[in-house]
Length: 400
Ligand code: HEM
Image 1 (cartoon, rainbow, N blue to C red):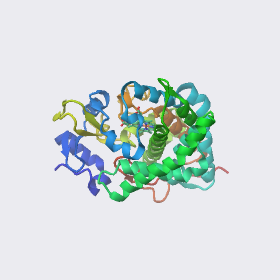
Image 2: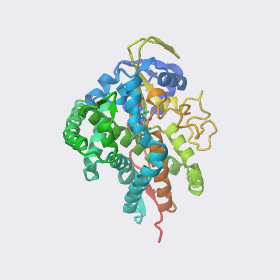
Image 3: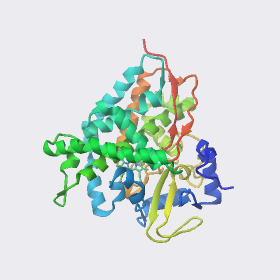
């Protein structure tokens, strides 16, 4: 039987359901979300790479909560706006200017629990670290951390509200209004007195002689908070949950830190933070199992594609040493997992996320000797649009 992706059983274990979809219904019309589900690696890769699959659906899915972001754009306007933030997220600017910011943020959080002997990683580290980094990069006030965290959580809940819970929908719209109320005066100040931060850059960049509107700058910030906070948060938690569940691999990584990029890439394959991405084909398109009619909504199931046995040997095994996942190409257009999508909208923050996870994992492993699962270690995953461990309880022997 074809499982219902909105059922509690599916939420508890989507991977069993994904297998049924891949094998029996690789193109499946899902009535409740009014979308076609695709689940095979080749089909999801096709949907990400082929420009016939547009993001026109985001005009009604993202617009209400964010406003107009680069995810809705295409062509030159998309490339130019994406290019405003891209340099900060890679290369020399990331290394020389923002790596110290990443390190400082990780250390500050770790210092809070390094002598405690136990830590719950999600609540004490991952939920704070990436959002603090992006808030610092934008030049916003970290004293407002709790608000940023509440806002990005509410935006992601809105986007993942497949069952259309009215309370979640209202909270998302309230967040849009609150974020605008908070950001618009700050944007006005940055326009008058630019600083050396990413927000000032967004406020002053000219595209064909015109600046972005206040509303579009605010939408950009909204996207960066949500895209940069929620996803990397889940990636770090999942990395440690996976390693602690496989002590031999944890020991290998602890002893040879050059394995961290492998462990991160395998975590993104095995436990991708984003499970669902929607697209809308401009023309009829053939995929496994049939034709998707032009103009319909397609839900690309990343979690299913990343465990496709036609793509990976023993796909349900977490194995940082697998030879069908190279880590060198994982951040180029030829990525070999789909967690960052591919093509035009390939995650612009992928290298920032990689830097955050590598720095965070190294500093955690340095600070937490004899790291092991603590009592109550049972990192069940939660969520479906985005998914990650609800809690990761770890024990360690504090250095004397
Ligand atoms: C796009 C995943 C970290 C900013 C995307 C997309 C995915 C993704 C799947 C494609 C969305 C689509 O096509 O509809 C992830 C994962 C991350 C991560 C798994 C962490 C492990 C970050 C970070 C930032 C960021 C740290 C920056 C603060 C963005 C932006 C886009 C994007 C701005 C839109 C790109 C465009 O439309 O051209 N991300 N992301 N992401 N991501 Fe990430």
